[in-house]
Structures are given as C-alpha cells and as structure tokens.
Length: 364
Image (cartoon, rainbow, N blue to C red; front, side, top):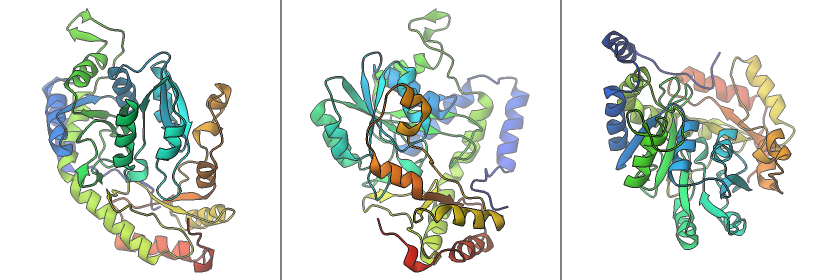
C-alpha cells in the first residue's frame, strides 16, 4: 500500500530516544529547551515555546494573546476542527469565513466583512502547506487593530514573500505523526513578542511563573523530553524532505490528467504537506475507489467544513459558504511524502489517468 503519509524514522531518531530514556529525565527539560532554540533558529523567530500538540499550541497562543470570554476570532470554515475548537476552549467564539477558490486560504475581503466590535483576532490556516496571503491579512489586522495567530500546523518550512512562516507575529505548528517532522505528538509556538512568549511559557505549565507558584489558571501542555529528542533528530532533515515533497508534487502535476492540480501563488513557497487535487463533483468517489483497488491511499481533507459539523450547528455557528462546500465535494489528497519512490509516483499517475480524462478537469 502506498500510504498518504509515512513517518521517516532512522537510526538518529532511535538513538536519540534511547539516550533520553537512559538519561532518566523524561519530562520537560534540557532537550525541550534545545529543541526550542533549534526551532526558533530554523523559522527565524525570536521565541519558540514547545507544547504537547498542535492543538495545545493554538490554545496557549490564543490565551497568551489575551483572547477569551466575549471575544470573537475569525476562522476559515474549511479546516480541521482543532482550529476553531481552540477558540472555543479559551472561551471565545469562532466566526467562520469562506475561502478562496484557488488555494483554499481564508478570503480576506470576507474576513473584513465578517468583523464586529467583538472581533479580537484572525486565525488563518496555511492549509496543505501553502501560505495564506499574509500581506493582505497583516494590512487588514493593522487597520482593524487585531492580532493574527497563524495555524501553521501543516506549513513547517513554507514561506510567504521570501520569509518563513513563523518568522514574525505568532504561528503555531504541529509535530503529529503525519506532519513534515514528527515527535509522535507535539507542537510549537513561534512568536516575536516577548510578552506573548513569557505568558505562553506559564500557560503551558499549569500557569506557574515559578515552581509551585500558580499565577493564572491553565493546564499541562508540556512537551516530553522523548518528543523533543525526536524533534532534534528530525529538524536537520526537514529542508531535504520538503524539497522532495516539492519535486514529487511537480512530477504529479506534470503527469496527471483530468484533475485540477494544486496551485502555488507567486509569493508562496508551497511545502505540500498534502498534495490536494480537485475532481469534478460526482467523479471523486470513483477515483478514490480505483486508487484503493491499486493499493494507493487517498484521503478527503475535509469532507465537511466547520459549519457542517454537528457541534458548530448545535452552537449556531455557521453561515453561507459556497466555496468551502464545493471544495468539500471535490478535494482529494494523494500521497506526496518524501518516502515515495519513482515507481510509486508512476503508479499514482497511472491509476488516476486510468479513471480521468483531460476533458473532465475543472479549472477553478
């Protein structure tokens, strides 16, 4: 089976974990600090705060920016539930916004129109490894006096206008097993704001400013030493893996027929966490079945937008989002990870082209 994702674990990772186990120090400690420093250097950020998951990164970052009860946060409706769940978990309310049709990112004009006097922040998602239009988002946030907290859980190593995601402002990353690098579970907050960083460090550790002194209400969001050891072993390999993803994506885009292949905006550097095609409505399921019959895993990210989720319908958080709904009906992600061989790529293209014809491609 050609899997949609394949964690690449080598001898360096195995030795790093073994050394950590033998050290006797397993909870947050010197390896976490070393990983934070290495990560901050990689994304060119002033501060990096390691946490237990990408979701924890979002929750802690929102709280560190003072987002809470009575506040509203703009969130694209086409994303994984964790993005908006984090807003609810800090007591605020997500306000959903439709996406752009070409790169699945938040529609800035619609975000502007959705604002109220309660709006405190924008939580854009760099979906599938492609950056949002940060130029327009930052201009909007500055004009409206809002914070931007970026969900970059799928975009480690991505860039906008030459700068790495996370190099300015506040961005949240994930090291889940399917991500560009993995610590099994884990996350990171990158920020250039010293006050946000300081508060985030308290919030990830039961609200303690110093040991056994609780300053604010929080919970345990700490990263383990074992996770940090994995991250330290994986981070030096990231650029090479991302280049392989880009190469695999370019090959697929050149050889696939009858589908809409991913686009890369001029200012973006796409790292293809997912290689997401669009298939004419009604044909996607047939293509997915054909891929499965050829032992190729293909996944729909995402079959429902947030406004279609039972929880958000119950909370009456919704609206009209036709672009997102169309994306839900058409998207299909194919394997693109750096573990693919040339034969795997050939198999994927042969299976897709065996079902689709060039005339069926829909140009968004």
